[in-house]
Length: 120
Image 1 (cartoon, rainbow, N blue to C red):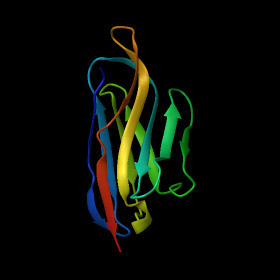
Image 2: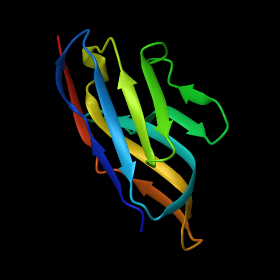
Image 3: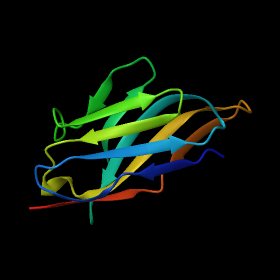
């Protein structure tokens, strides 16, 4: 099973920045789709940034121009750089990857979630 480990959440003042990381175990052969999602209290989980290998990254309208997703292929790690944070960005952030393991099986894994809290 592919495990994703997230880090980088925390408490930040409005206007500040955070960078989230999501590292996958070395059992990945290829990750074809990846993304970041968030879930605020009482709300459904929503996509923040999603992409397929070789394709464009799609961002939620609410984060366009402020958030950037990137990927380090060698480290099987994705990042979410979040700038100009505002209180509406407060949520638990989850990463997701789908692809193929070294055993030639498919996987669809989620990170454990990391809390991002933006104070006004």
